[in-house]
Image 1 (tube, one colour):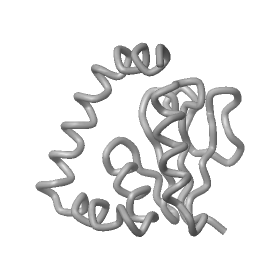
Image 2 (tube, rainbow, N blue to C red):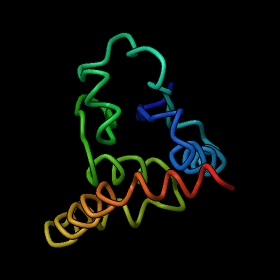
Image 3 (cartoon, rainbow, N blue to C red):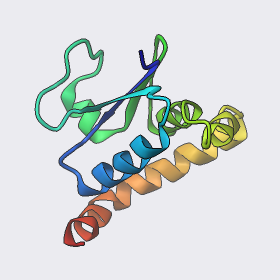
Length: 117
């Protein structure tokens, strides 16, 4: 059974491409990828609006969002685990969160570009 749950916006072409890539890397099946673009998933402690606005991940008993969520997902994939562990360090975790917030500001433009290709 997967120990990490990733909720993602399947209606977002950028998100769908990234999740497809991560599914290929997740050869052990450690991650349960849940598309929340239709209905809010059952047993999810976060509203669908929140899930669509910001990346959320459940790692064990903890729900993480933003860069911390990405780091949890990376830790579940052996190839990306070092990056996920690096993100646990406050200096790097803070830097990743700042980059994630920047990404959120430019995400609409990136989505438009991704939908054209």
